[in-house]
Amino acid sequence: QVDLMESGGGSVQAGGSLQLSCVASKYTFSGFCVAWFRQAPGKEREFVAGIEGDDTAMYLESVKDRSTISRDNAKKTLTLQMNDLKPEDSAKYYCAGRVQSDCTRDIYRYTFWGEGTQVTVSS
Image 1 (spheres, rainbow, N blue to C red):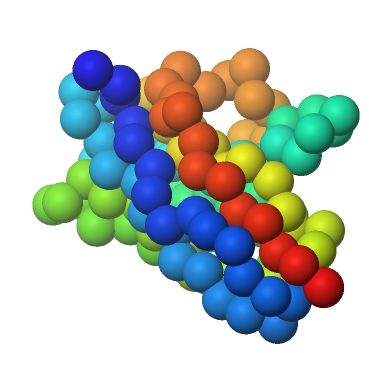
Image 2: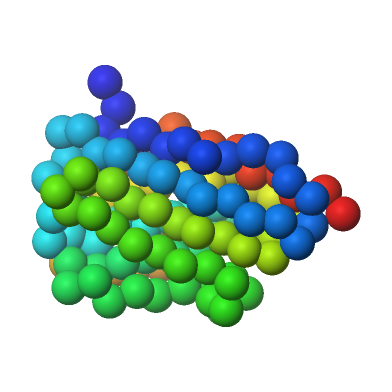
């Protein structure tokens, strides 16, 4: 059983929207940082958005004005709404969780990971 499970990926045209979801199983989730990362072929995994234990959100600069991250602690669910998608947003998106309240862009500081969901944006 995986700790985090993502859903909501798919193929869209540029300018479209997607909502990614992540559900936690064993991971406590509440009070901790949970985040989204993405990895395109041949590139390093990069931080996209995170939400801290106090609900403070942080974003990658290139998605900041067209994305919203949110969490539902009761349902142990993390959501990323992405609008005005661009071909450069194409990647596999991963949900990640820490056991600390604050978020970091460093992938090595995350303990829990999902298996990812693919997002493909065509021009």
